Amino acid sequence: MKKLIFILMVLTGFASSCTKNFEDFNTDKKRPTEVPGDFLFANAQKALADQIASTNVNLNVWKLWAQYWTETTYTDEANYDIVNRTIADNTFRVFYRDILADLNEARKVITAESAIGELAIANQRNRLYIIDLLECYSYNHLLEAFGDIPYSEALDITNLSPKYDDALTVYKDLLSRSKAAAEGLNAGSINEFEVGSFGENDLYYAGDVAMWIKFANSLQVKMAITLADADNATAKSYIESAYPGAFTMGENANLVYLGGSNSNPLYIDMVQSGRDDFVPANTIIDIMNALNDPRRDDYFFANGEIYQGGIYGESSPFGQLSHVSDPIQAPTFPMVLLDYTEIAFYLAEAAERGYAVGGSAESYYISGITSSILHWGGTATDVSDYLAQTSVAYSTATGTWKQKIGTQAWLAYYVRGMEGYTSWRRLDFPILNIAPAIETYDEIPVRFTYPIREQTLNGANYAAASSAIGGDELTTKLFWDKF
Image (tube, rainbow, N blue to C red):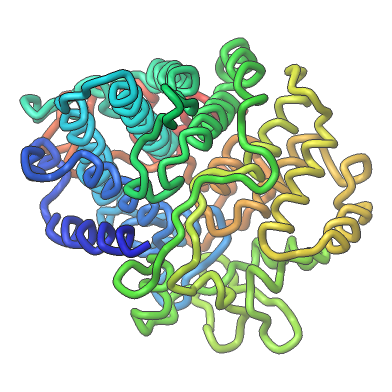
């Protein structure tokens, strides 16, 4: 643990020194002859978890756009203004400069290491596969935010104007890379010595290669289900192949924050800042109230004896409404990147689509709900009572399978804004509220527009990408968002 704390202190110093804009990810600031590849990898892990966790409106508005939270005073971001704070530019910068560039440099450093002997070579290979997996996860996030993105030329330091690659082509390459990692990682032993990876420099799994294999298979399920409406055959093939090796109940990928200078960004944004900028949105609280959801006291702090959310997109009086629960705002609150709850709901959907996934849609739906409630500290009784309600039980809940699975998955992904937002975009449930800045439901954004700096500094490639996706608008549906 002391070593882990030291690493995080060093990495915090690296992160705080990064102040330039997106295009500077092409500049070799890391000096890999001096910075070990393992440290660069850990730095990328922390930057990725921080970005996913953050509720800083300059960096991450997904908890707002998923309508889990809304703003109290300044409501621009809940009303879909991402231009004023150049949020798209900031998102690009963090992913390309602080995450992907570090992973790329880590790969270069580790590849250049002199690995002597079968065990050392296997360890080196494991680390390179794990880097691949985090790259795939990060690119997937960018694809789900923007559509076509720089990929094949993105990390070429000699090319300051990378082309944008077709999103479907990139998705398939990410799936192929994730599958290769799942099959290539070695969690066994050589001459009675365990084959390792990053050891304590791995902030998610402490070097547990078997868990990285499960992550690789889970990531394939996650990415493949997104393709289901656009390329059913590819989605089916990957999911049926990967799901047996994916996460099981209680398993996940997360970063457990240590507190102090390495606190969860939610604590920094909501407590350390001294600001009262967010309250839970009425969208989620109204649905959970109607379902008598046992997770309410885990998600929220009640206003008196009732749970009441702020009207989405409108100014909300902080003192008169429910608040985000204290454990979520704790400095050591873990940030989940991917977990079994997510996989269970994906497999419920896969079963409804006719994929051979070893269970029924109902059984996976029950597993997803069970996993979520237990994760948040609920009991077996909480699970059984919740599932016994006609409004929750799979056979009697209202609507199509998309409504049933979509609503419960969205509820389970609370705090993980991008997952909730993407689930809503894919399955079209639950029904969200219409923010004051728009007039119709169809005006709710379904993507980020491209960064302003890309429009000015990479104009030709930006124009080509904009044309390819059907126009650089917030309401332009991405290729997988068919219905």
